[in-house]
Length: 136
Image 1 (cartoon, helix red, strand yellow):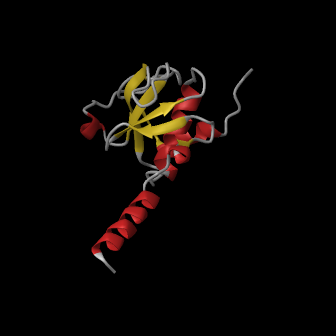
Image 2 (tube, one colour; image 1 turned 30 degrees about the horizontal axis):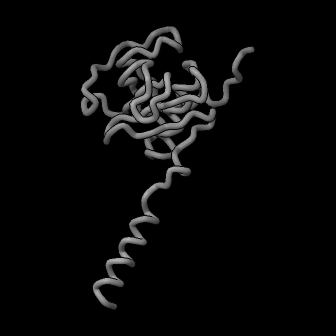
């Protein structure tokens, strides 16, 4: 093989290994989940979203994409605010490593919708919200 063909072969392999735009992670409740940096990821719901969508989607991503164990804790790294990865109006950022994200773990609120920095649940607890039917 020539250097040029080796380079093209390696470039093609790299292109196949990178995630494609159409392959972004979508949670069981339909929210997009995008990495912000190496320790923080952002949940961006289809609409404004509620606590159920945010927690379920964070746990779904942590378990299926990051391979976090069920007993790992997922923490809110930034409360509800505009998305930094998509520009949409509503998102919440999460982390599995509060130290790397520069946040201090806090007691969790009684309200599922408080979404305050530092609140946490185990991946398993948060994933439980994926199967809870919303009230209409």
